Length: 553
Image (cartoon, rainbow, N blue to C red):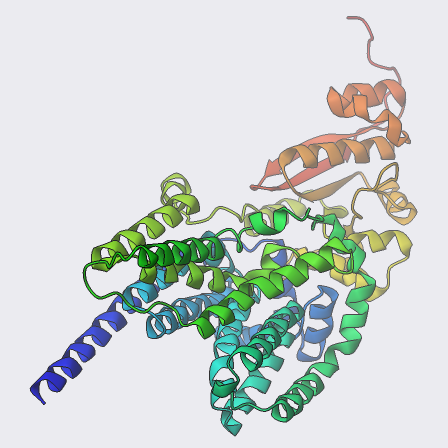
């Protein structure tokens, strides 16, 4: 009796210690995400702001224009009305979701392994650069991660204890996942693989019947059906994804980031563990049993099935899905598999050393501390200061009004060459019509198409408008070199030069070269300001000169 009471007290103390440690890790993770919560939104986040600031009935259509489901943007719409429009408000959902993911995965791994493994998994997620980035941006990927993890980890109780409550939760959360981001359907394929393997390998443990599964899947499909029209529209634009998602050769499947981490570690540790036991060597101290085969199969399917399907869809050019953010929901699986290697290490100190090595390697690979020392930020992926750029341009605009040409580089902008609809034109203006609104008339805010070989940026209506103006503004997303090249290219187009004759203009003194070719009012760069990977350029037209400049050396 005394021994049982002592064991129960020790278990309670261990649970309290684990809870306290996980809470501290979650606080560190939340702090790393909050550090960057006040910085300027970048392009994709500006789309979120544009959706959230719209009227309720416009939110779904604006989300669909950006190839997104509506649920996340309805949530943002409500938060903006409740808390006000700001960078922190728009990123709050992701910060809370990413912090919740740290706690959820840490608790689950500790329950199915050792407390040390759970704490290590939570720490890996807290300091992961991609997790920090997705967890501090106004996009749905952090929410997809935590709901995807909860949905997939609920497969075990669904298969072994299929109560009506579990089944209802599985259907509703699955539908929510799909409408948060359509690529979450890849997780449903992983869950189907898990159920199939459990039915085949451990039928005695599965209480969930195929007839029940068929009814639940049908209910889920019915809840997903309202997105069919949007998916058809997105499918027609799927060629656009080839502009930023490359086809990967087969050997890259194993080298890609989710597969290069946890799976290799768990297979190597399993092999070493089995080899030591075969040699008859027993480590000092009692070792945890390690992950159960059912859990290992479930997490391996979680990692491998979505990534393999995305690679296959990209390889066949059906849909370019093999891209980190489209597979963000796979990241916790890689972390769990990596953390489980700790429980396979020999002895208590062996597990401590394994945890230290794993965390040290992850910290070194993340470049977290050097980046904090360099820039004061955990990750430096966002380099577009739209907030400062729009504020500066608004202050300058009163003194120098004129058309504002926007080269945002969004892949949908090439529709401008084909006679865009008002809806398409409004979408191409969203970077300057969201949280950072440039107060100029719509007809003066002119989005430019993406660059295509041997085609002009300036369409005839834009050229006619600039012919009436003494100057204009150019906003370019990208490195400063791109902004200068585009400015020079526009000057050449305004002076009537063909594309093939712009290269020497871009290489040297553009003003003098253009003047030598054109005796008349000439456009030139008057002012250029840089805001990270965003530039604002003012172009102006000088008065007509009666004599050409001297050509003497």
